[in-house]
Image (tube, rainbow, N blue to C red; front, side, top):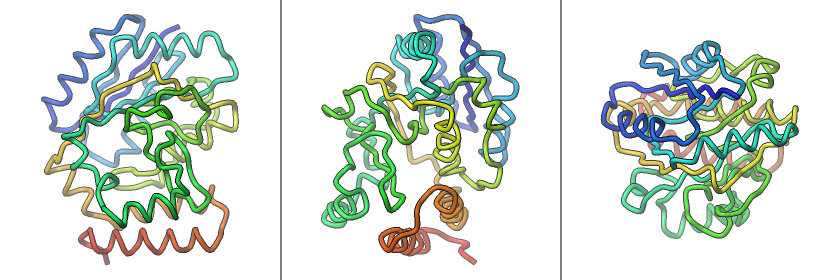
Length: 263
């Protein structure tokens, strides 16, 4: 069973080299790498890239991850033996020194409130979407929960695998997602889950090394598209509620305060 690994990368040669080196070191060798280094809308780049793939499993990874040497072997073993599993992911551990580059790890008392109210104390669980439409981030930490086999609501965006037959059946990504493409992967997972199980396996692990890259950071400051992406996702998949309206208001205030070019 051949695997197709999709990587979109732009002007980050050092991170990309580490990522590719970890792929070359894989114990499972029946794979191809499709590298997209074009500029443009990220969801469109991902969508056109998987359509070039020849494998039976399509795997999307970020260019700033380093894969465990048996990462691919575990992914393919899961798909080969379990036809009801249509998507696979695993831990995306973020080292302590890199946590400062991720907004979700900051906040002090407010972070505690956010975890309690919006994440419903599920923040340390991998791959969950709470009732208000917020996503958990437990896969980034080495904990008992992140080290457990489990079903998930979505596959971790830095690394996830989908059966090619299912990807073709759903028609790929929703191309209405814009900018840095946030929520396009989660939206894809909800479509994929119509065909089977999304599975989190702690052996399918990578180290995620998010950096404060200037070009990427500038794009993330254009926050209007990020908010609109969430609204598109929520409009399709999240049941309206008072808490959800509060979460939407929180996100809008956050993005307006953080961003630029909000017109």
